[in-house]
Image 1 (cartoon, rainbow, N blue to C red):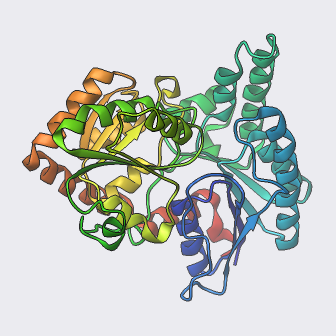
Image 2 (tube, rainbow, N blue to C red):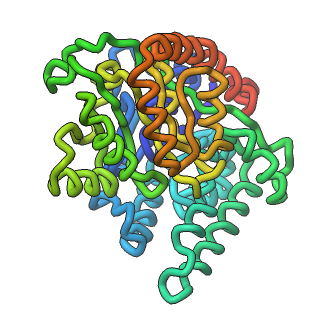
Length: 399
């Protein structure tokens, strides 16, 4: 039996599904996440059918993490890292698999693992060092550029010093090797979404009726609207489809949602419905009320970030309208599956034209619905996914 910590700072649905599956196989699993980070979450509570070998705990800082105040966030991440390590110490794992955390947290956790003979695996969900470099470039009288370069080097060092790295797109494989990471320490395991937890729902479901969304045509966007997204595209979409009686529904919080709220306040967006993050228990119904599901990724993201919401959308069996870099894995996935329409990031005209096509062509939407769920059922088998993690992390040696 292997004692495993799976640390997913964001608390996403598919990571906790992996933890539950590993626990069902006899491993002792502690799933840790940040309880005060503003983000949509998966099913992060104990369930009656959970095995006794599974635990899930939130790690709380003294205040909610200020995602866009970089100075405050630096100190809050240090506090989070200290409390995270306290949880890891108490559990005393053999292996830690850690993703979706800021690099200072990952570095501190990796250092603890190395000191105590714990195998640390870096779950590379985003290239955060490159992201920091782009965000900070030219800021703070030029010091931001130096800080960004510091985090690029830190991310490279974490990858090199890890027992192994799980990367979510083949685009990361060659990059890590270029950083000097041994190719035997790089394992490509694509993200997935939980098939059993995200199910196909009828449009006239209880959540839709509660919010008056069971009739008419709905474009629905769910999840984070942050620095890698352009909320103005959603406002443009609402204006564009208003004359056709269509709604644009956004369930989000943070900078992008605040921006849309201000745009709506100024008028002219009566068909834009804004809500906060919804409980995961109703997520299938939220997706079910959609005629088309929308996802957005900025051109600067390139191949560095793969939005997991696109995978959840496949589980829901809905057509997808995706604005993203064409080289991004999410774009390639939607094209491969035949589950939606992909347009180049920030090409407003192409985005609105694609919305028109999806709104008008019911036969095409029906085909995309079938393709989306079929893709999910063929690629998101949690037992097959867990097999790959057991092999990569060599959990069978101690199982």
